[in-house]
Length: 138
Image 1 (cartoon, one colour):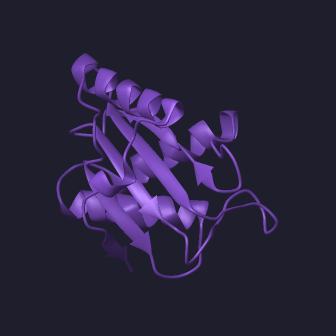
Image 2 (tube, one colour):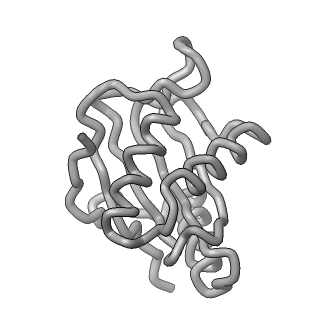
């Protein structure tokens, strides 16, 4: 079985909060016509965060949502090794990597691909050298 790979990769080049990160990524996705509304996807990500923090550890977070504003499901990797993301408050950060999972509401095949990706991360079968080149987030 092939391990699903992320569709996009970004590198953080300045200090951001979680919401700032969501806004920057959604702005870029809107420019690429991969979402129909930046605001709606940011709000849905923040709502999901209000239900339960998606920070897995100090090193990693996996924010996610399903939305009608998402035109194609995506697995996005964000490198924040050089600039940790302020997560909940000034004391909580994500220091290495963020996996952002965005899913179309009704695409079962893509939802399965995202679940398989998460499973590959959990079992250690994901290869980080398979990542695409990183686009800098301004």
